Image (cartoon, helix red, strand yellow):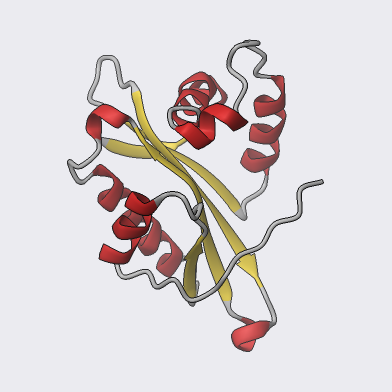
Length: 152
């Protein structure tokens, strides 16, 4: 597997990964086949150097997308002006889970955060994702905060 910056051509595979679990299947709408909202979001992410959408692909010739994640680099005044890396939407194809791909991706994300001068890597994970919580804890992440959302 290798990691690379996502392209607009990767969107169908990325959306399939996002929708491949109970939470994602309720949030993502693949039935309509309308990728326009995803394309709009992709263009915004891709145009902003503070955001990076990454895919993991298999070996050539097919190079199928088998995993994805988004990194956002957030400047802030707290923690003495610390730059934070926010990890979002980490998904690995269900057939490949448990083989170390997710850990390798997170390791790469942590190193990219260091390379960019971040003081902290943070992420959110839904409270119902117990397996994900155990995974992130094995990588050294600590559940230090309670997150909140307001749907608009």
